[in-house]
Length: 204
Image (cartoon, rainbow, N blue to C red; front, side, top):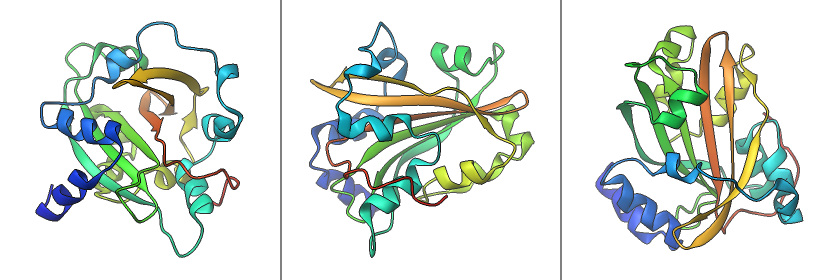
């Protein structure tokens, strides 16, 4: 992370985002813990967030439509790298013992990183990089969603949406797996207070 990006991260006003950055300095966010237990049913989600939770296409495109011109959806890269998967990731991605992953965590915003709309984590088994997924590791600060959904050979699993208490506040989140044969990409998206009002799916 550059010095300028570090200054921007400190400016984040949302308590959850600030806590996320501090957690990243000590390791990845505790996503495996957040997935444990029985979450509230999707039917309890506020009506305003339903389209975001159930959208089968790219959230990046929907965010761009919601922000409108002249804003552009951007990703503030929190961290990325290679690591051992968590037990949850290993189970969801059907990984063998000893396999490793590439992971990437970002905050998506509409031009002002002090007001992020969502936190997202992408997890890819390293063996999946041999199936045309290697470009996903080179996105830097660009949103990864549109690239994923232009990959015609990837097929999406059913979306799991749930509400979790995180850092003292309840947040709605969703996750799904995009698969190409035996290779899978786990995508987790957590919606933050500055999520804009839904304005349609947008274009991929």
